[in-house]
Image (tube, rainbow, N blue to C red; front, side, top):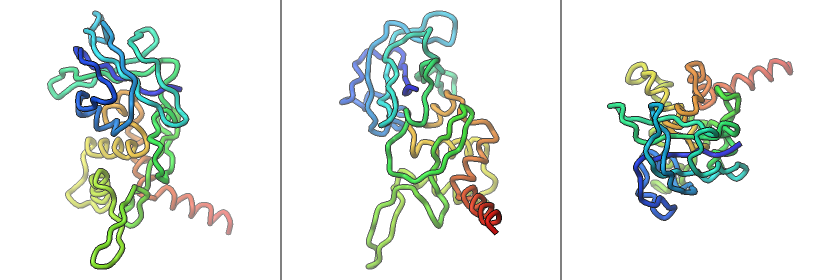
Length: 234
């Protein structure tokens, strides 16, 4: 279909690919080096029926097999969801084309990560990496420690590993719904240009998807499928 859009209200500076430091931190973290097209819009979305202020529009570079969304503010052709802070102030907007909502191909990070898919609320299968403590498909760096080769998960994924281990072991008590949501969003963000705000805006997760995502991430879904196939063959 087509990639994501962002609208940053009241931003008058050119937001070019050479100036990622000008982006809101949350957007910069999600893009993680991904490029974008930029244009300035004289008006933008609003939480009321009135016309919103002008600002910067970004069309995110799609994945290798994806399509870039049309860069600009076209309210009749687009959907926009506000991303606000804890006080309800709108920080920026996440958008997409009504007729071409983002797919896993559009938002692919093109990373060489083995994954299994989970069908989410949009009916598409989104990639989830394996993050079991004894076996993971997350990117790892080869290190020599005490004369022995070890593989360390890249630092950007350490929080995911710690949180999955906590969920499995039950250490620290039962995780909150917010913690589970953040974990699912982070797992989706390994292979796709997604974060908590983007997952929320696109409405990808229902409550029942939390369990489905964690089953795949921890390897339980693959194990169950293997056991079922084994029994069928016996």
